[in-house]
Length: 411
Image 1 (cartoon, rainbow, N blue to C red):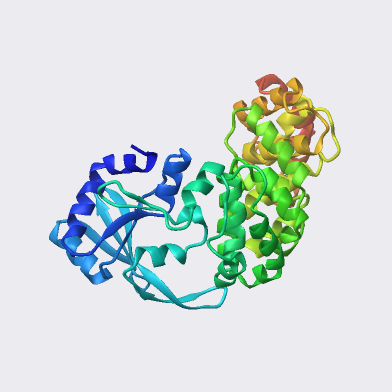
Image 2: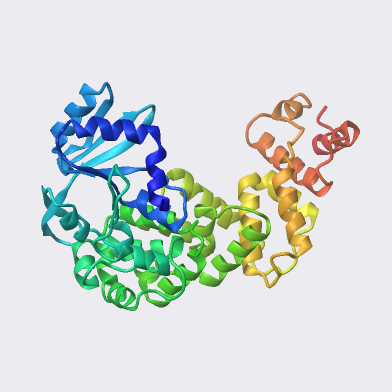
């Protein structure tokens, strides 16, 4: 039994195959699930392709008591829910016209022809319900070599959809090993200016999928040397990303795409603003990048981890997430080794320590005669600074003394 055949052990898939058999068409597992299984990776989702038309697929689902949703029926895609799990079922298609961004397609009935219109050989495998694995493009050989190779002529595949340039690098980052396919890399470089034609949402999706990948630092560095990052992001710092990834690995952390984006392309708040516009980042993503950059401003150029007093101040003024992000970015700019105990202790401290809570409220000052408004705001700001300098005391006697010093003779 090959690795892909184990997909058929899923009883939900057996239920779906039985339902779709009623259409009279042929249905196979295709794409990423087969690819990942053959690479020895756990598939994230299982997609199917069929010769049946979308309307026939929906009817077969209804007849079997399954929920069918026409999620992309204009492109031939129906989502069928089996025991709570969604499966995308897409009618085979043939390209009628492509312009590098969008394709005009018609429904087809030939699995080999459908395979030939896909992007990479490793993505063109298909698996029948009886366990037969079909490989029309040499994908199995490329999987064995862990090589990402365009189907047929690389330039033609890229002209059909320029997003395939980014997918070429993404799959090299997640699945590939060794040198890039030379033809693919050459044609990707030649097509780089056309990446500006892609929607920012599509570019963001590919970048965010690429960044957590195993070889992301290496591949992003190659993209930078090829001039592709300049087109997409404006600038990149591969060495920072490589050092951040090493720091994550020592600490047993999974690659964080937003933090890795910061390491690769953010030095200042203005850089965060640039990426928000270029990638159509979410509000939370932009806010996180901006907060990390703002907190990092006081850490540029350090080679030793900040002392605990500075770490506490970062937690109080900036919050846990911004403090943790900024520390990781500061390490990435330093010359320290990833296993430097001071940096590791600092990172652990920020992760485990709650942000200090300022123990004095505005009402405490008002009760002592401070007028609400501008005077109150200035007094709170001054008192907060004194509390920080005093080391964030929680002792009520010390807090009371600071409060009395702040209000002077107001009472």
